[in-house]
Length: 142
Image (cartoon, rainbow, N blue to C red; front, side, top):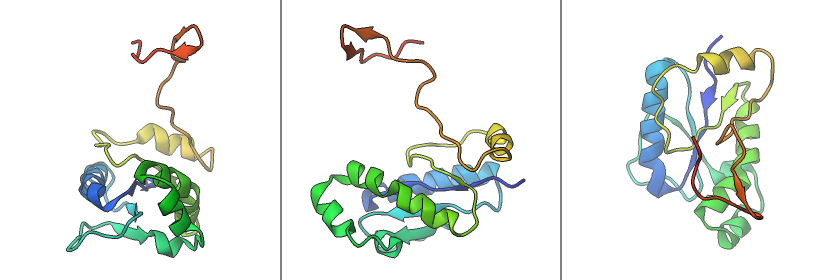
């Protein structure tokens, strides 16, 4: 089973991060596609061997409204489900990766899990944050 397509979402100022992610992912998963959603237009002269998806191609009639209401991080979060559905419609298996990720080894476990499920959610932590009163602590506990 081939590796899933990687799908980061970026602003034009983070496009280079997505290119580094794409190169590191492809190093461990040759012939895999990387779809990059650029929410505010492709930077001039950008050509990184990735499939660029511009927000206008997602058929979100309200994307301009979102862009006015949200900052870049919130906008990327708001369009994530539509973007992933867009890639899934192309019969790709998908893994969403943040653009500031560098892949250091093959995602063998992910491929095994994707044989059993249509989607895999990856947590940022594996244990709850310890609580002080009702506020979570800001430091991670090993």
